[in-house]
Image 1 (tube, helix red, strand yellow):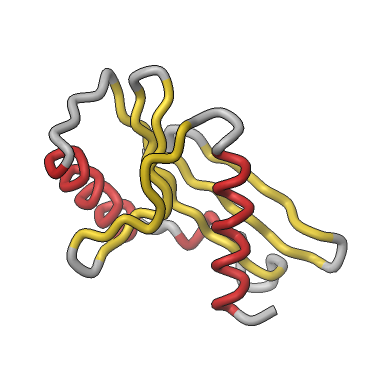
Image 2 (cartoon, one colour):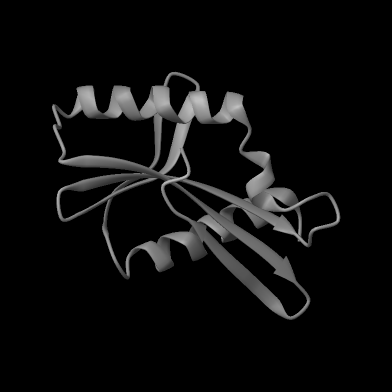
Length: 115
């Protein structure tokens, strides 16, 4: 499985999972060259979700790829999103969904309110 396919499949799996507890407002929403993978909403909370996917853990776990610089980008895009749509939610939350593929299938890890 190549990197591009891994990323697309990871996002598809994450979206399917998120739909179980939230309404998805947008996917791959861009602000300049930066992007947020999933923007979702439930009970007055806006969720900004970064999805990371990898084939195995040989080069580290997917969630480890969300470093401080990536977090800053996500927060910048989130602020632009709220301003663009004139949203004033009760709360916002930043989550990471990590999808790790193996020969047996995949494992999904949902890290909530991570920053």
